[in-house]
Length: 535
Image 1 (cartoon, helix red, strand yellow):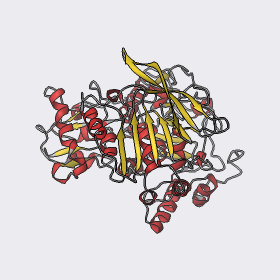
Image 2 (image 1 turned 180 degrees about the vertical axis):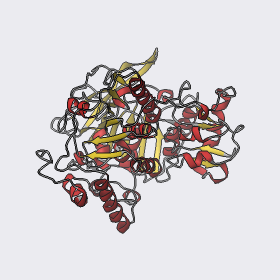
Image 3 (image 1 turned 60 degrees about the vertical axis):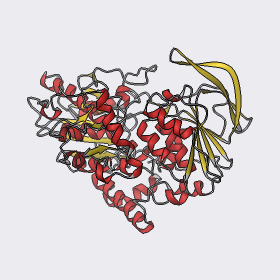
């Protein structure tokens, strides 16, 4: 088999377009693409040209001759997909014509959110002649979850940032960072200053458990912990109870695996990554030796992806255990069964995967001391409590049961689905959404590429139909607004600090330090700038 997609796949489908023989699936527009854990190379069709590897932003495609022992399972995973999903009759995606609007010269679009969804939307727009895109973000730094959500020990996944760096250099692109839409500038102001506005603000909070004691100190959102160890300015001052030997994570998706892995990793290994210095110092002093992950349903229903499970099972310094018997019904359960049969290695930190366990309440009065769980059984696809309960001692309990978007000032919001109601990204002509605020917190980094293309297509349809209104005003600069030069100055400063420390970068984690690093590029024209309190 010439080329293989490995666990670093981000599913952005750039490889699909690059492949001259239609050997990579599922592709955008095919059933299952939005839910796919990864993409797969057909071993029969692939001609070993390497075009896919060149196009991949995260270095996920490798020739079979260069696979490590840990990556060898992906040979069978790629091949097995095509036994179950033949694609012999599929026309190559690269031949599908792109949307062509009748007139784009002078089109001005504001994109709110500089994460993957916003950057992919900007990329789609800038492929058209004469388009100008201003990308707003409330933070002084761009790239959203690619910077602040990807685990620091997953550097290949972070390579998608290099793709965003290419987009930033496109003619017509401009950053307006450290500007918060809805607070510093309203929806109405943006709409009067641009032909169209795309909100791609993501899902900034998490779903709650709804159990007694959830708000006790020591009961924490995994979303916030991820932000903390990734150096997010909003989480820079956070502290977490790491003095107990056990932590519990409610949930077993990829985020749950990430936080369990970071909490049990050797700090010396994390010291070679871009993890927050503050988090690294705290983890060096941590007493946590075991992290237990709770899943409401059984092993076959585990929310983590197969690639992430393979990566976890290959760790050589952490014991990964699965409690109970595992019925082998898939590649995922096969690996779980093998983990369940492993003999623990004395002295290692442990990650324990426990299934059929649902939270009942947090234990403790002034501080979390543990969690009570109830055993469940799956009935008609639902986890039903059996009444059999157990108490697990822990000083830290993390909920990791999914992200949730917040309402956006000036936009309609569906509280039940936690998204802005839309038709393929269109809220109304001139106002659009992309990413998690559009479709809910589903998919992977690269899923935003096809999602953003759909949104931009709706925008261009409205442009062709004459439904977009020409700008009548201009949003003025703000006192501490940063443009691309400001971000590049921050980037250089972080990389320089990293070079001294032998790390890819040392992140600046508070706003004053970020502003200081960007100083020559900070806009301080008091005569033209709006002043914002507290920035």
